[in-house]
Length: 257
Image (cartoon, rainbow, N blue to C red; front, side, top):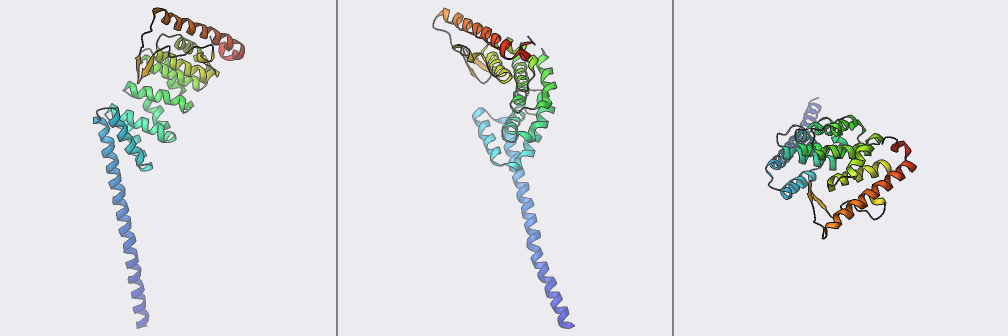
C-alpha cells in the first residue's frame, strides 16, 4: 500500500510538472497577443499625424503586414477615430484587404461619415464590391444637392454598377460635362450599366487632353483654341451615337430617358 501511495504521489507530481509549462505557455501567448495589439494601435495612431501620402502609405503597408490580428482594430478605428485621416486610411485598408468583413461598417458608418473623402471612398467602393444593400443610401446621396458633386458622381457610378437603370439620366449628364472627373465617373457608370461607354464610339477619348491627380483636375491647355471645340464636338457626337445604340440594343434602359 505504501509503495502504491508513493507511486501515486510521483504520478501526481509528474502531472503537475507537465501542466506548469502549458500554463506558462498560455500566459506567454496572451502576453504576445497583447503586445501585438499594442503595436497595431501604435501604428494606427501614427495615421493622424502622417505628413503626406507617402508616410500614410508606409503606415498602411505595415498594418497590412500584421494580417488578420489587425482587422478588428482597423475596423474599430474606421468607425470611431476622431481623426478624419485615420478613418479614411482604415476604410481604405479594410475595403482593399478584407472587404467582406468591412461591408456592414461601410454602409452603416462610411456613407454617413462627417468627412467628405470618407463618404466618397465608401460610395465608390459600394459599386466596385456590388453591395446591393447600399442602394437606398447611395440614391439618397446622389439626390442630395448638399453633397459635393464628386460624392454624388460616385453614388451615381455605383448605382449604375448595381444595375439601377433609371440613373441613365444622371449618367448622360456626367458624360456631357466639361469636367474630366465627371466624365470619368460617367463613362465608368455607362460601361457598367450598358456594356459600352463613349470611348466605344469613334475616336473619342474621355480625358480630352486633361488629367486627374487625386480629386484635382489638371487641365492641359490645347495648343490651339480650336482644339477645345474639337474635343467637345467629338464628345457630343459620341453621346449621340451612344444614345442611338442604346435605343436599339438596350431599350429597357433607354426608356428611362
